[in-house]
Image 1 (tube, rainbow, N blue to C red):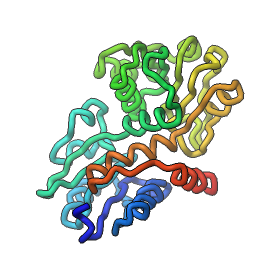
Image 2: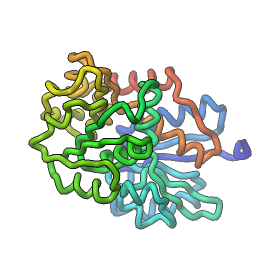
Image 3: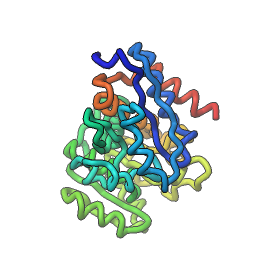
Length: 283
């Protein structure tokens, strides 16, 4: 590529951010492609976000990823936000253009769909209904991706029903919102159930959900990757459901970022996934 005459820089902005496994992934790709560069954690407090983003260009960064709590606020700071980020309501990736201006997009949906297709190559959008649990930013990204793939029936349930209704209103399409009290019933007959809430994350209580009505043929997915197996996924596995966690989503959302930053589209290899899982399990 044409950029090998300079040191390539990118990073992830968040607060806190030192727990992020993104540097491990991106620096693996620098090594794999024999490129001079590094990807670093950028601990940026909310009040310093604008200054940090505006410093990317003069410091020579190609761009950055954004994580909690910066994904929404950044939309009003960058110079341009694409239609995908507008629809999802958050930016996960910032690109520094040649003129120094900042472009924002959201690759989280690429991450989920890429992970789904790699881990379950036989998956098809017309296999049956999909239930999505949660109404936050992760839910919006997953719903957007599933609709892009052509899912015909999407059942959305969230503890705060108004948040789910807002997603259905914004996206349109085949989304039906159900009350939290119906969270068991909406698993009946589905081809896949996806947890997008933080319930089951390390230090959080498990997702309050019985899987009695979940078909054994259904996929069970969780966007959480710490721990590698949430109580939701463990319960599904014990019922012989196929499962996958959020590691693949993290890996696959990085690929389009690299394409925009460096003109290279890296591969998610079994070795990289093994490194990520080992790092998470060892904490």
